[in-house]
Image 1: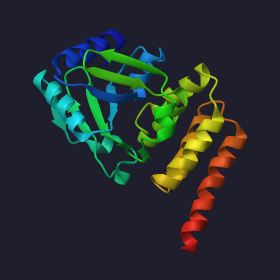
Image 2: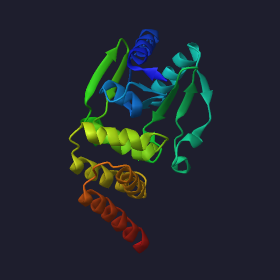
Image 3: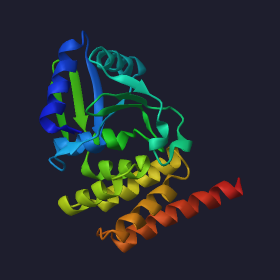
Length: 219
C-alpha cells in the first residue's frame, strides 16, 4: 500500500529523474488520494497520451526497483483490452501505466476537459480527473474494491449524473460498444451495497445499451 505522502515523494523523484516534460492523468486510487477520498492505495494508476512518455516513466520506475508484471487478469474486463497497461510491481505498491485505453474505456475529450486538479513535480505533470470520471473508470477497471471506492465517491461528492450519462454515450459510440452494459452492471452492484444511484440513471444507461444493440443488429 502507498499513502499520499509516499505517493508525492515518488512523483517528486520521478520528476527530478526526467530530462524532458511528461504529462499524464491520475485515475483510480491515485486520483482518490489527491482528492482526499482515501488514506492509501495499492495501485498508482496513470494514463498517458504518448507511448514514448509512458516508456520514460517505465524506465524511471525500473531504475528505482520496480519490476514488470503480466498479471492483466486482475481486471474483470481484461478480455476487452486492446492496449495492455504496463504493470510494474514493488514491495509496497504497483504502478499501472495505461496508454489512452483504460481496459474497456477510452481517454475522451470530456475527461480531459473535466480535470479537477493539476500538479507539477519538476518535469512530471499530473492531471487529476473529476469524481464523475473516477466513478466511470472504476466501472471499466472493475477490480477488487472498486465498488466500495465508487460508493465513497457518491457519498462524498454531489455527482453530476448527466456527465455520467453523456460520457457513457460517448464511450458506447467511440469506444467499446458494450461499455454501457458494464456500467449498468456496476451501478446495480453499487445499489446492492447501499449506494444512492438515481433510478432514472440506470434506465438511461440501459437505454443507451439497447439502442446500440439495435443499431448493431440492423447492420
